[in-house]
Length: 383
Image (cartoon, rainbow, N blue to C red; front, side):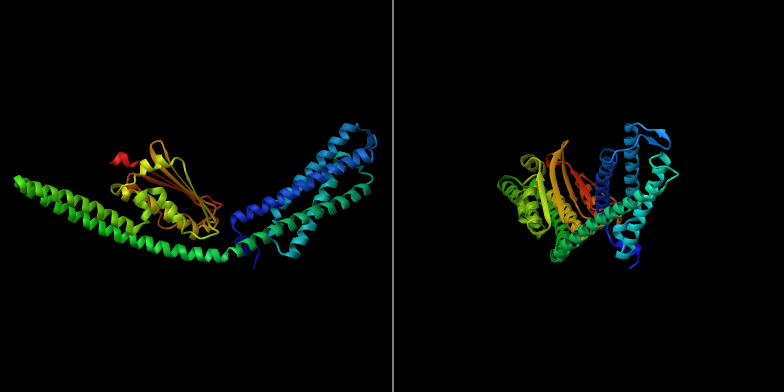
């Protein structure tokens, strides 16, 4: 496997995490070593009062040594961030560690001579200092590589232990997606056909009732009322066939019922700002069950996309009422969607949400994951 393939195999989020570990480790150890070296040179060993034939105050000598050590640490951090040693194989990584240590030590020696810490006429002290500092810098970088490689091994082990759960989640995603879409299509067609037939029959009964009088008119009105009740019950039954039974009692119970079907260790957290307010805005009767069904389907599809395309391990669902609109937010910590664009089916979800007067917004960060935010008007505004 080439270097480019090795780097590409790591996700963007993993590479960022490894780089943070490398830079943090080198920065902390390098900074601590720089302060210790300065303290030893200036305070413990003592410094002469002349440099390059000129008198040097104690404060100036201390300041320039700190400045050089600070530039040394910064140079090391820049080199480490550019070489990406943590992504290399063992032998190339070792060679780069030594090269970086020698290079930074040489740069440090040049700065020490240029600024007057060591005399240009006698470079042996500067070379001795460079040998020691080069060794220490190489050891610091090597330790940072060790810490980062340990982090990579732990990450791989965690993902390997999650493999069975990931496979079961994948199977669950496929099963739920197929069932949900199939049932929704069937229920939509059945609902449209029954609605059309009911409207036709209701129109015929209304015409007959208008021409009737007396007892017959009362009976026809009773039949018309009963037929309306049958239509509502049929609509309710179709919705319950497509979605969890809990949808009859409101959106929140239905979402909780769906979350309970997702296996561990996938973590789904549901947060509701105000249950009573959400219940009032989304309704709990048969007349508004179609609207809740659209919201629920959007949540279900978003979770399935997070599992299948983003490889998410944690999903957060937030439901509330903001500025008179029902707001539903679905976010995840997945990394698998980096650079892949929007998941399939998102345009269809937008059309469904738009059909009930709402809108669906999606964000696909470069580092992966996905964030969907849905706004729908409350049922009272459309009653």
